[in-house]
Amino acid sequence: MSNISENIRNLRERMGVSQEKLAEWVGVSRTTLAQVECGNRNFESLELFRVADFFGCTVSDLLTKEAADLAAIGVRFRRSMGIQEDDAVWEAVAKSIKLAREAANLKKILEVGLSESYIPGYSIPAPASKPEAIRQGYQIALKERNRLGLGSERILNVSELIESEGVYAGELEMPDDVSGFTISLGELGSICLVNEKHKGLRRRFSLAHEYGHVLMDSGLGAIVSRNAESKELIEVRANVFAAGFLMPESGCCEMIRKIGKGSASRESDEVFDGQDVTRIEERHNAEDQQVQLFDAARLAYYFGVSVQAMLYRMKNLKLISQARLEDLLREENTEAGEHLRRLIHRNDQDRRLDEPDLFGCTVLTMAMEALRRGSISRSKCLEVGRLACRDEQYEYFKSFVDEASRHDVPVMIPGEDIQ
Image 1 (cartoon, rainbow, N blue to C red):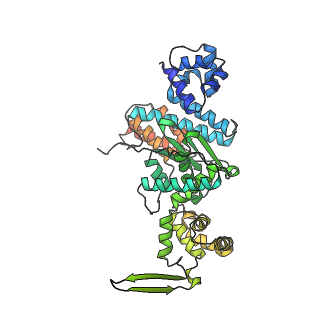
Image 2: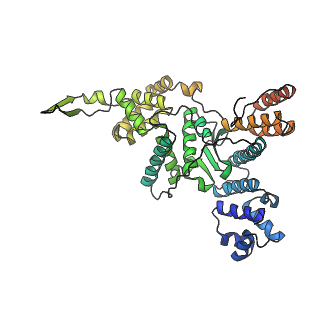
Image 3: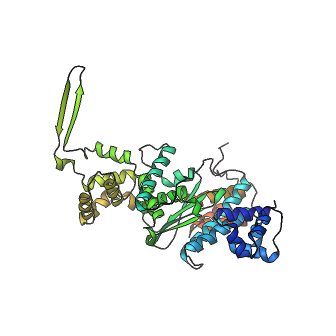
């Protein structure tokens, strides 16, 4: 089978397109397309241009698997999300895809992998109802925490965690109604990017949300998380995943017990001493057991989420009632609640919980190492820098490259050990 025949077949299968649909677009029979994909027949020039048009790439792209793959993903992303070429979201997506191409090329040049980890694709059906979406989200969150050996512990840094699993994580400026987007790049991995204009705690939650899409929706190729589509079942599922991933049930319940809350008003136990049974009863003041807003804020601070996110999680875990949730949400909306947020969540103001933009950083370090080895030119290194840097960062990068070119400055890249 020729390279182009194999690429056409792989692209069609990855995009979930039937032979009948592609054949109809090209203007040939399904049998003819099948013969082409088997390498027994070649497309004529006009037919090949129609194939390239369908996948949103050039004919020369079809000769290179990675280039054609990424071009097709980008166009499918734009078409499926109803995004125009002049849309700000598309500009961010296109930039990310270009950067992913550079990352793929640098990986080949340096002959190192970004990660030895394996990202599982959890085989679950598309949710047919909201209860099913919620159930699936929590189940996958628990499975993934167990796979990563997290237990009930908090996640200190989502970016570092998911990038260690082979997922690019970063930030880009996007429209306010977009919290983030995910692109599946097949063998090249996945990209999770969140809106850099949003506050730190929201970006952290959004990154966990996008990671949920990587695990549960990789077959879709690309997903934009917009406010207007938050009721879509896969968005509900990803939100539930993020809540379960960042706020594990066992951890939340353990924290509540540690602060002496959440017990029943009357607890009883029976102790058997070998002959008789002794019944022990303990009464608690119901008001003392009631979760207060500052209790929720304490848990929110510990797990690195907003107070509102923690309140809803506690309600879903039946640690508070619906009525109590409504009372606490009203209190959180008052001036006292604002003071409490500033007191407890000072991390969201001094940016101590900000997730690092590892996607760009990883590509920059690979470009600098490739330059040091003489594998790419200075102009190519700076070209990558323009893609990966923002604002004044590029000037710092350019200055470093110029200085490093005069001296042998070692650069460590992912996948290499210090000699």
